[in-house]
Image (cartoon, rainbow, N blue to C red; front, side):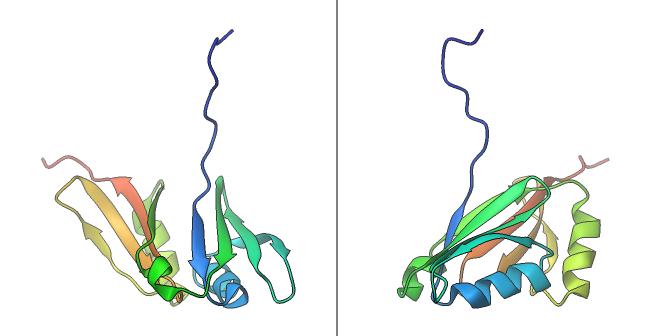
Amino acid sequence: MNESGVLTSAVPALFAQDVAQAIEFYREKLGFTLDFQHGEPISFAGVARDAVRIYLSHCEDRHLAENTMCWIFVENIEALAEEFLRRGAPGKLETQPWGLREFVVIDPAGNCVHFAEAAAPAA
Protein backbone atom coordinates (compact mmCIF):
# COMPACT_ATOMS: atom_id res chain seq x y z
CA MET A 1 0.00 0.00 0.00
CA ASN A 2 1.25 3.48 -0.90
CA GLU A 3 1.89 5.56 2.22
CA SER A 4 1.41 8.89 0.44
CA GLY A 5 -1.46 10.37 -1.54
CA VAL A 6 -1.66 9.63 -5.25
CA LEU A 7 -2.56 12.21 -7.88
CA THR A 8 -5.08 10.74 -10.31
CA SER A 9 -6.08 13.54 -12.68
CA ALA A 10 -6.12 17.28 -13.29
CA VAL A 11 -8.86 19.39 -14.86
CA PRO A 12 -8.00 22.74 -16.44
CA ALA A 13 -10.45 25.53 -15.65
CA LEU A 14 -10.73 28.06 -18.46
CA PHE A 15 -12.41 31.47 -18.32
CA ALA A 16 -15.21 32.69 -20.58
CA GLN A 17 -17.32 35.81 -20.70
CA ASP A 18 -20.08 33.71 -22.29
CA VAL A 19 -20.01 30.14 -20.96
CA ALA A 20 -22.83 29.01 -23.29
CA GLN A 21 -20.77 30.18 -26.29
CA ALA A 22 -17.73 28.36 -24.93
CA ILE A 23 -19.73 25.14 -24.53
CA GLU A 24 -20.91 25.41 -28.13
CA PHE A 25 -17.33 25.94 -29.38
CA TYR A 26 -15.92 22.94 -27.50
CA ARG A 27 -18.81 20.75 -28.66
CA GLU A 28 -19.02 21.85 -32.31
CA LYS A 29 -15.36 22.57 -33.14
CA LEU A 30 -13.49 20.14 -30.86
CA GLY A 31 -15.92 17.24 -30.40
CA PHE A 32 -16.38 17.50 -26.63
CA THR A 33 -19.68 16.62 -24.94
CA LEU A 34 -21.41 18.60 -22.22
CA ASP A 35 -20.75 17.00 -18.84
CA PHE A 36 -22.68 19.49 -16.68
CA GLN A 37 -23.74 23.12 -16.48
CA HIS A 38 -24.75 25.38 -13.60
CA GLY A 39 -26.61 28.68 -13.34
CA GLU A 40 -28.94 30.75 -15.48
CA PRO A 41 -27.27 32.22 -17.38
CA ILE A 42 -24.67 29.46 -17.27
CA SER A 43 -21.81 30.46 -14.95
CA PHE A 44 -19.93 27.15 -14.70
CA ALA A 45 -19.83 24.07 -16.90
CA GLY A 46 -17.79 21.02 -17.73
CA VAL A 47 -17.07 19.47 -21.11
CA ALA A 48 -15.43 16.10 -21.71
CA ARG A 49 -13.85 14.07 -24.46
CA ASP A 50 -12.31 10.65 -23.89
CA ALA A 51 -10.40 10.88 -20.56
CA VAL A 52 -10.12 14.69 -20.65
CA ARG A 53 -12.39 17.16 -18.87
CA ILE A 54 -12.30 20.95 -19.08
CA TYR A 55 -14.19 23.26 -16.74
CA LEU A 56 -15.49 26.55 -18.12
CA SER A 57 -15.98 29.35 -15.62
CA HIS A 58 -17.66 32.70 -16.15
CA CYS A 59 -15.34 35.69 -15.89
CA GLU A 60 -15.95 39.16 -17.30
CA ASP A 61 -12.22 39.98 -17.51
CA ARG A 62 -11.17 38.85 -21.00
CA HIS A 63 -7.56 39.61 -20.05
CA LEU A 64 -7.55 36.58 -17.73
CA ALA A 65 -8.67 34.22 -20.51
CA GLU A 66 -6.17 35.71 -22.96
CA ASN A 67 -3.39 34.87 -20.51
CA THR A 68 -4.53 31.32 -19.76
CA MET A 69 -3.30 28.18 -21.50
CA CYS A 70 -3.20 24.45 -21.01
CA TRP A 71 -1.72 21.41 -22.74
CA ILE A 72 -3.71 18.28 -23.48
CA PHE A 73 -1.58 15.33 -24.53
CA VAL A 74 -3.10 13.08 -27.18
CA GLU A 75 -2.43 10.05 -29.35
CA ASN A 76 -2.48 10.41 -33.14
CA ILE A 77 -2.28 14.20 -33.33
CA GLU A 78 -2.45 14.14 -37.13
CA ALA A 79 -5.90 12.51 -37.16
CA LEU A 80 -7.11 14.81 -34.38
CA ALA A 81 -5.86 17.91 -36.22
CA GLU A 82 -7.63 16.76 -39.41
CA GLU A 83 -10.86 16.28 -37.45
CA PHE A 84 -10.58 19.72 -35.82
CA LEU A 85 -9.96 21.38 -39.19
CA ARG A 86 -12.97 19.55 -40.73
CA ARG A 87 -15.09 20.86 -37.85
CA GLY A 88 -13.87 24.40 -38.55
CA ALA A 89 -11.57 24.81 -35.54
CA PRO A 90 -8.99 27.57 -35.93
CA GLY A 91 -5.41 26.35 -35.78
CA LYS A 92 -2.70 24.40 -37.53
CA LEU A 93 -0.47 21.45 -36.79
CA GLU A 94 3.17 22.31 -36.14
CA THR A 95 6.30 20.59 -34.86
CA GLN A 96 7.86 22.64 -32.07
CA PRO A 97 11.61 22.85 -31.36
CA TRP A 98 10.96 21.44 -27.86
CA GLY A 99 9.92 18.09 -29.35
CA LEU A 100 6.12 18.28 -29.53
CA ARG A 101 3.70 18.17 -32.45
CA GLU A 102 1.01 20.67 -31.47
CA PHE A 103 -2.35 21.80 -32.71
CA VAL A 104 -2.98 25.06 -30.88
CA VAL A 105 -6.51 26.43 -30.57
CA ILE A 106 -7.51 29.85 -29.29
CA ASP A 107 -11.12 29.56 -28.14
CA PRO A 108 -13.62 32.45 -28.52
CA ALA A 109 -12.85 33.70 -24.99
CA GLY A 110 -9.10 33.84 -25.74
CA ASN A 111 -7.91 30.72 -23.88
CA CYS A 112 -5.01 28.95 -25.57
CA VAL A 113 -5.35 25.15 -25.67
CA HIS A 114 -2.39 23.10 -26.93
CA PHE A 115 -3.25 19.59 -28.13
CA ALA A 116 0.15 17.88 -28.20
CA GLU A 117 1.99 14.64 -28.87
CA ALA A 118 5.70 13.85 -28.69
CA ALA A 119 7.23 14.30 -32.15
CA ALA A 120 8.79 11.29 -33.81
CA PRO A 121 12.60 11.35 -33.47
CA ALA A 122 14.43 12.58 -36.57
CA ALA A 123 15.80 9.74 -38.67
